[in-house]
Amino acid sequence: MGRWSVVAAIALAFVIAACTSDAATTMDSSTTSSSSVGASTATETPKSATGLQSDERLPEVFFEPVDRLDDAEWQRFLAGQEFFNEVWTPVGPTETGNDGLGPLFNADSCAVCHPSTGRRQVPPEGELTDVGLIVRLSVQGSDPVTGAPLPEPNYGDQLQDRAIGANEPEGTIFTNYVIQQGTYPDGTPFELLWPTVNIRDRNHGPLTEGVQVSARIGAQLIGMGLLEAVPADSILATADPNDANGDGISGRPNLVWNPAVEGSDLGRFGWKANIVQLDQQVAQAFHGDLGVTSTLIESENCTAGQDMCSTTPNGGTHEVSDQRLEAITHYLRLLAVPEPRTAGDPRAETGETLFDDFGCAGCHTETLQTGQSVFSALAEQTIHPYTDLLLHDLGFDMADDRPDFAASGVEWRTAPLWGLGLVPVEDDRGLLHDGRARTIEEAILWHGGEGSGSRAAFMRAELSDRQALIAFLESL
Ligand code: HEC
Ligand code: HEC
Ligand SMILES: [Ca+2]
Ligand SMILES: [Ca+2]
Ligand SMILES: [Ca+2]
Image (tube, rainbow, N blue to C red; front, top):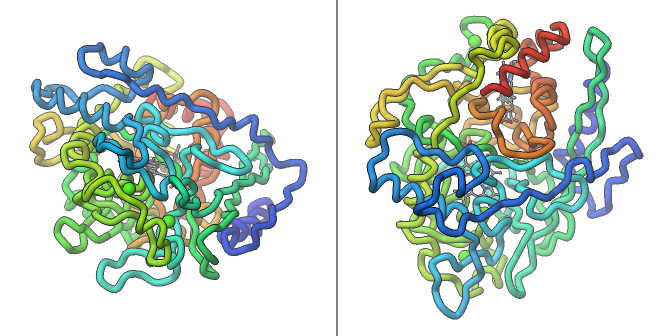
């Protein structure tokens, strides 16, 4: 275990990076070069969706709706897809319906970070813009009413690294990786990328000392309506906060603020399950990532001291119309999950058995049932998302030390694994919450805490079995 304690020291760098000086962290020559994790991802914006075959609209796989949509639902799905890919612009002389970007923002469309509703590559080293990585900020404590993390006073709850007009971006996100070497018991070497994130060029005053910083990438957005339709009771019933059954795994629900009922509710979306409903997640993305107001979040993302941000002309009272917001929500709700390709592939079938043997299914629950839904295609379905939608301690190496409602600084929501093998990205898929894992194998090797038993079982297995497990995940 010696090699893991070496990285523990570096882990601290990740947490305190944001409150150290702007000076570049000098890394030795073993750091990776950014060329291996290039920044370019083409996000083809479909010009006109209507009337085209779906495979002409997007070259990728995550664009099919669930079955049994009626005509009106299908039209709305197509409209939502267009709005999802729509590029937003700063306020212009005439209102166009997609103006009101910023003043502070991270990207000008949803598709920048979720290309083809998939995900981006491992963030490259160095200064980052438009690579799909965002940085959440907070200070110690929580809101006395909602329980939400407290925003950093000068920078709010998210660092916007772009700005329009005379506004200054809040800062620059700067990433370094240190290569961490390890070996399997059978002698096979492996390498993991240890990320450190710095915030440089802070243009809006000092960052509070001890600010909590968490880097996040987006993930594939499939089957979200199905996950939303799983009854809260059945998720809560599988929680085992004190590990009563003694298997080393203690799933906990994240109970978060639901603005729709002004009370506490089960969180499902986001890496820490801090959002209850899909429409709220969409509004949150418009607010934090694009700087676009809506009926659900009426304010711009400016903090009290950001005067220019607050006084820059906006694109109307609600910059994104309810119609657009609802269409995007509808689109994401009804996006189907591709069929797994496990059956008939002997290696993947072996891997499926190993997935249980290694204890992966202790968190990545294969099967859930949906309950009621206004959409017949979402109601009473047996689904295979490979998640329990609960929080788990994945250990110090994965910690962000940024609590979020009931989720502690070491806890994360079990990531759904459906569709993982089809994520439309060339080369490296950025896996895990900050995209640090270049491969499924690396993602597994990062599992600590409650996941360490699984990781150990995987590491002890023969190479052919490790490959079979990965073949199974690639077949999802
Ligand atoms: C700058 C990058 C960026 C942009 C732009 C962006 N997202 Fe995201 N998205 C993310 C990140 C990062 C997360 C994970 C957030 C977290 O867990 O804190 C996320 C999470 C989500 C989720 C929840 C996924 C899950 O598995 O729970 C949905 C839904 C979503 N985004 C929709 C959208 C929509 C709709 C838009 C456009 C209005 C959008 N996003 C724009 C980066 C982005
Ligand atoms: C203790 C619960 C637990 C166990 C056991 C577990 N996982 Fe995970 N897994 C998680 C959580 C939580 C995440 C999300 C981590 C994050 O937010 O970075 C995750 C993430 C992943 C990811 C990355 C998904 C993505 O979208 O980025 C893969 C792949 C994965 N797990 C595979 C496995 C495999 C294979 C096993 C068995 C060897 C396993 N997990 C065992 C909880 C678990
Ligand atoms: Ca705006
Ligand atoms: Ca901000
Ligand atoms: Ca347990």
